[in-house]
Amino acid sequence: MQLKDIAIFNETPSGNPSPASVGAYPMHDRLGRPLRDLRISVTDRCNLRCIYCMPDRASGKNFQFIPHPEILTFEEISRLAHLFTGCGVEKIRLTGGEPLLRPDIEILVEKLAHLKTVDGRDIDLTMTTNGTLLAAKAHALYEAGLKRITVSLDALNDGIYRQMNGVNFPVDQVLNGIGLALQAGFSPVKINMVVKKGINDQEILPLARYFRNTPVIVRFIEYMDVGMSNGWTAGDTVTSDELVSMIHAEMPLESLAPHQDSDTAARFRYRDGTGEIGVISSISKAFCGNCTRLRLSTTGKLYTCLFAESGTDLKEGLRNGWSDAQITHTLTRCWQNRDDRYSQLRESGFDTARNKIEMSYIGG
Image (tube, rainbow, N blue to C red; front, top):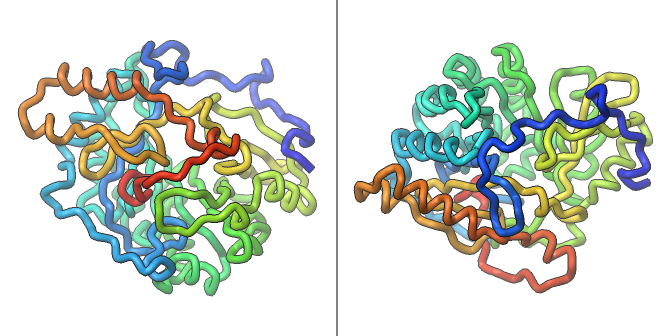
């Protein structure tokens, strides 16, 4: 069964998703894609060694972490985020590494939660975390202004989860953090499960069953060739069609319209109304054509693609007295020169071999 074979259920009377902000700021890249989303990596450090991101044990690689003085301060991040919103950014996602390892992260959240889009709406602020520290931080983050959160959770089975995270961390502590995030008021809470064939694909149905009849939205992500350390091969990938077919056979699904054209996840709901899932087709159905995302690294470099080889340095300008106009000019030029479409080229059979930046430095 293909995704297109599932009947589409439209949530709006017109049958179309309601656009978030049509024509907010006319800044487009070379392929006509507007700038809408900013992902900010607040630290390169992580307390897990997941096999698809920082696989020390699998690769034998010891990650060299960035000295603290080289990392952007909260004030620098806040200043840049303000300038980005003036260029059309409507959504900011805090990532890492593991963002909750950054001391006093709730202070940064409070600074960013007050930002407005160019048409005066509140910025859509969210965070992706591995959930290991969420139980201790959930209430403070919510009070600081973070209302949405995504937790990486690759298995319910404790043994498989420990294998996936590479440091023998127990799954119960992450589940406890998810529960406390719901109690704090986060809505929605999303789960990201990266699926690797032969490792955790047997956890697809258990995870779907566990979060059915809850406010939590599970998103299944195809294992992909990000960075240079995870040893990806095409045979590692369970496609989104396979994922949906597996779940649909037990718990019938129907397709939902996207919230925005640039959404990475294809949305589905259970036909009996007991919840929603998503699939992110990182490999089998490239979505480069709608990509509106720019990434700000821990050290202040702009990356125009998750699979980029190099970035544009803003930190040097920040620390050498550049005006807001100078910084804005640099980031505008960076976006307007963008023509990245790595996944589409890979899908078309082009040779995409390159020295890609590790995901822990620029966020997922």
